[in-house]
Length: 458
Ligand SMILES: Cc1cc2nc3c(=O)[nH]c(=O)nc-3n(C[C@H](O)[C@H](O)[C@H](O)COP(=O)(O)OP(=O)(O)OC[C@H]3O[C@@H](n4cnc5c(N)ncnc54)[C@H](O)[C@@H]3O)c2cc1C
Image 1 (cartoon, rainbow, N blue to C red):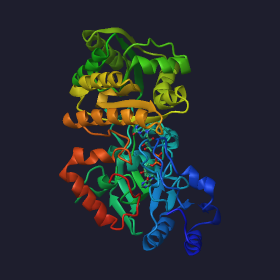
Image 2 (cartoon, rainbow, N blue to C red):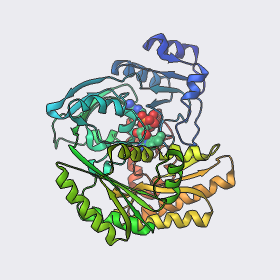
Image 3 (tube, rainbow, N blue to C red):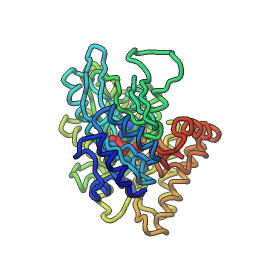
């Protein structure tokens, strides 16, 4: 649906201020793609609501009129998650950007969905608190809830799911519901909050959330560890996790990626298999002890260097470079797109999986970079190619399929954090079997007309 009728335009315009509804081509094109190579169907209009009431009115109308509706956060997804597949209306939530209340004594914040993660952390920081889930991008809270986003600190602090206590959601037909509560525990009925977390905007639009916050750690220590072999590095990961060192971040990087990072950011890092680690604790003495144990374990696995106590500015540079890995890869291959593998597996299987992926890349002669949130078994392979070059792109698809099939075989998942979107739909049956049917039934129950973010997950 690339066009709205005049009546529909008039009705939609009546729900919001004039400048918050647009049928202009540039706004529509801006909401046609996220960072992936997936392309959708040009939406007929974009609407920027500012309240739950406006959203309920808009959705009641679009449902009556059979207009497909796709929620949109910051558009930083990697699988086409917010890309409209049937045109219609895109609902851009970025103007609902108010932090409604921070309650430091309860370690909680009430926020609108368009609040950006970094802004929440800036404001929570003045109370000594933070919201730990940290995808590299400055995503909206609504987009993070919808994708159940996580990141480098998930190994210690958990994913977005672990921080969502209560939601206000507008269902596809316009009905407003509240899920969860502000108590730290509850055994009251089905956990509907968790049903909406990770549902990628296919079941409802989140219009308000109560989030759990946590205290900013008083001390942190960063370390870089080098190895001659990738399997040694990934074995060290399993060992450190098994020893209960509880790292706040434990990232694996391969020489090819470090090479790109050095060239772009002048980091001067040895271009060998490496781990970036970070530990959080209550005192420097405790952290020094942790680092000593980590160093011993790494050297047992064949580490050639262990550098701890990295200075604050260097630590910041390292993490920024890691967070910007995807952009760095993209810039190093102008004119190409990326296909991102996001498999996750039990950590004991991580070393084998890393080798499996590296070997596959070599065998297929493809350009790709292996790295990942090793501490929680999440492996990324950023594959580089041109989607309009059928031959080249199908090799990348083949690699993706092989890695996912292996991950599922090992008891893992096709997506550790990026969500299903368009790109991972084809793996859902394989991964979930009959449960996938139940997911479909839940979707049919809540959205019988399949109008909310259609073409995603299913
Ligand atoms: C450089 C880079 C690094 C990244 N690293 C990570 C990482 O380490 N970990 C990780 O998890 N992700 C990562 N991502 C992916 C991305 O940042 C996250 O998935 C993020 O949660 C997307 O949020 P967004 O605000 O951009 O949402 P969008 O991309 O706009 O939307 C995401 C999904 O949420 C839905 N949605 C948006 N708002 C709402 C709402 N209010 N109610 C209901 N549904 C809604 C959309 O329809 C869509 O399905 C990275 C992205 C980039 C560009």
